[in-house]
Length: 464
Image (cartoon, rainbow, N blue to C red; front, side, top):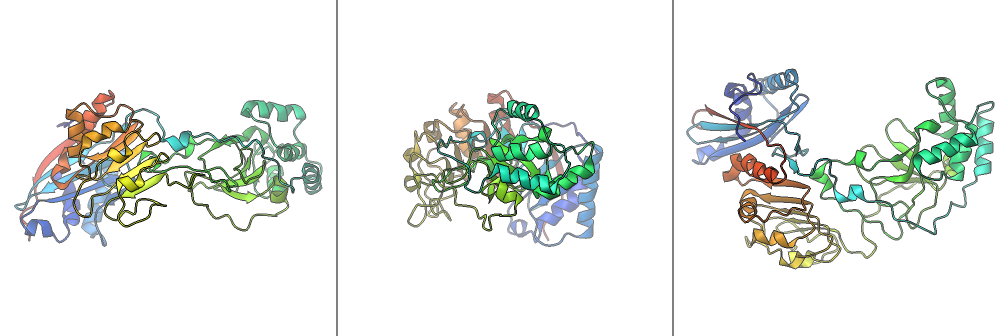
């Protein structure tokens, strides 16, 4: 959708963007070779993403900061832009205004990901823990010793009643471990009414301790990084894993933190883990958790695991769930040979397939992966597919990223998979300013709000 009404007149003026465009043109090799130069980027009130190497001139930085101030005044989250600059200097600048249906992708100046199903998450963030019927507490778990140690460290502190602990279990829908019950029988922790006592309790346990009423499971949805990276992730818990490969679990009970990350008692351990082990949920990661101690007793007594390295995320059958094929690809983990091929990557456990342009220029067929039961994400570089309509054979896709020509073929044939929850459009150079039009056609199929793009014309003068 092209909107001639400028949402912010101070930002929607070509002259405001001119210093930024000149900065991004760099040495202007394209225009000196009589080719159209194309640049893209994003500017938000608190940062920017510009395809530019090296330091910015003071004039360019001033221009960007002026745009940022205008966006902040107008409470506009971010503006994406694309520009085509012809050799004679005539320029078309497209400003793409924020949309509730677009998720920007960190590190990429393009349009971002179209969210077709409101509130949707990539499959790994919906995954529930697998039951481990034989899971038992660690040999070191000793609720009586733990309670005795804490009473020695916290004399005179009032703990929770059995009724209060039972009410917490009912609220969470889980049975707390005997160790966690022992902890709260000693101290219920109340940061609001007795800050100093809460601090003492935290020191006794070894972390900033949560109150009984603050206990909660780790919500997978709250850790979702967005479709840009979420769709490319695949989860898999190996048979020798102590912690299940999940974003969250109702059995990961947060009981404390270290000022940024959360400690949780794990009631849904991996095949090689212990019931009630202590794990660390890193706030900088959107998936998984690290084993800290085999039991809460170990944690309180300082007997922590020294090695907390991540295990490779592989399925129990050893097959790779993510594959990258084409130029620079190696077929994904576990696929032997030189450049990856779709045939080499195809197996029933495949979940994510990324196809780059082939090194020899020959496009790839999707026939080898047609009908695979778990394939949910496909990204293909512009021109990498021999027949875009073969996408129709991928019956479980939830995320699809293609070039504008490939999307055009699917749209014209009425073959866009209706299983999609998210999509992305990648542009060749000549399609630079047509991405929004294609995106809006895709959004229309799901009756989603359209993206607004403002087109501005200007003149930067001939290349020097």
